[in-house]
Length: 259
Image (cartoon, rainbow, N blue to C red):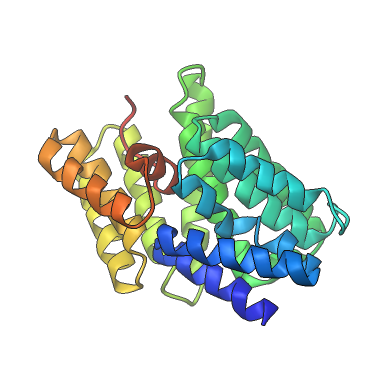
């Protein structure tokens, strides 16, 4: 039952059903507390299921929940806690606009997980490569990022995108398309950026990741001044539990355009 609840939460997070995820988490955490299920109490507060609190636009609570999980009872040095904890905390950093912290976490986690052999497994390898690329793109847009470092970050993101495409599964490819779109936009190719985001959105539609698709379309509409489309997408996101559409879009999908 614990594994079922865990996987159900991850499914809802990737599907972008954050309102349903919040309901699921509230009930499942209450049951886990009643039965002393420490395994679930740790894992449910980390990784993708931590989006339950970001969807509610409560980043401070998301951080508190992650901190509770990492405080024990399992050592924070365990590879799974490193993986899930850094994934959750980097998402919170990106949601709140702290790109330097997000990139530092993703880079540090990659090194630790590689040393601990967890990156031999496909899902952690893909999730962490995508996170590293997304955080590099966020940092490259930071106003204090010098041009020389910006280009290195873009090259790093491009290598991670190639890593995603090289895997023999389809679901990471929209992520690679979105990374490529952001790189193109940062280098001034708006046409390629729009085409890449639209391709990513279609790919996410195909694998049932509607919130990611909406975020990609949000960036295209926002850059094009399509305020009515942004309003429609924002309402769609709120109906699915993402109260702050702009923050959610900026976290889940790197924008090709800097403000």
